[in-house]
Picture (cartoon, rainbow, N blue to C red):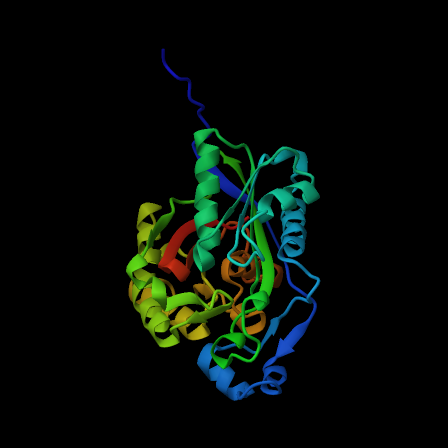
Length: 323
């Protein structure tokens, strides 16, 4: 007796992108009123001008639903066409129930395969790779991937090292079959021996060894981006848009600089969404892309190189064609 296996399409693409942010804008001056900091210090240290904080009654699931609906509208895809929902996140208030099943139900994706994925700030790239492979294996037809975070639930409000960085929001992508490849292979991995660099203090508040994380990210992430390009059969000169996880503007700039020493063009557009959105973990890459498309700095057909990295320590990168 031989088992029968499904066979999906050979290629996938991102069909649409969407995002959402809370309405509440928090400036550096606002933070200076509750902790020992100031606007210049924050801008020089992490590059952030302002960020968005959700209200107490605004949930991660609420933001995920809005971002998911926006991505479906952008793709011209009805909820009934989606059969799988993946919500990468690391900030649900409890591990059960997961976010994905709730989001799928509220959006109207009936009987969806639905699961959360926790690779922290690398979560969106992990989930995009999983979504692409599910479709190519024939396990799914169309997948809705939503990176959503409410980091303010897990950051001590007066912690100068972390409260200035983290924020809330959600970004989503609709992934479907394609005749030509629109999503490259995922280049991923982890450095579990460094797990203590980002952790939960007293099981309550997010904490990190900031300088150690900075050194790791500025030396180890550019090679991951180069590996993603190589696996997609491209070179740095092919990249139109670079979107690293929006962790720290100095880290973003360092990654871009290293890629340019390897042949990336001077006119390569580099995401700097962290300036006005802060660090939103798994939401940062899709949210940055959505904002760049609306601003006209990322255009349909552009070659986009994404690379996420964060707690775990987990990292992942891939190339996609901008929808």
